[in-house]
Image 1: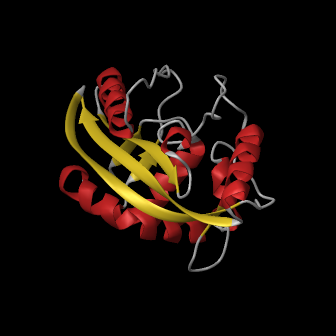
Image 2 (image 1 turned 90 degrees about the vertical axis):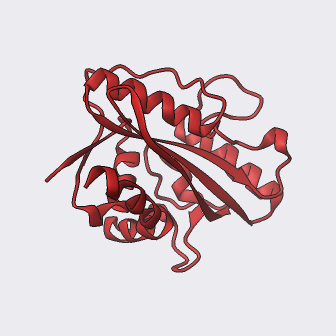
Length: 200
């Protein structure tokens, strides 16, 4: 079984990607502990994905896939859109905890309505030994609610305010099998088609 290294130490992100590309039969792993985190100072999600993929692949002398997310919520003015700063609270410079982030987003969504539409932009880059092999962007629409689930996913708290329109379930309330199916539908098909020629 081939191994695919994901340029993150976030267990939730590793599970997300592993579930999305399950059909490829890859052993999906995150970064080893000895690799130091890097500064993501790109101006776009794609630039951040490139920075992570090229740096980590150079340090590991291996192929690395990195994914960076940007979030856009319908009804928010451009200046207040999370964009690539999903883990930041508008107007504050410090990095919030999962709980603080959740409170901020539920309040923001509540101001716009009980449920609103939004979209995630998944910027993906695969690099080998510091050189970009291939990159793409996947847009994934979502429904956001101001009433969170009681189950909060550490590192991915916004999954407790996102609802799957097909099942009506919060992403955070899904079983691992249900989440795998969800991610396969939302980003998996495009991600597998993108990866298959270069990884499998």
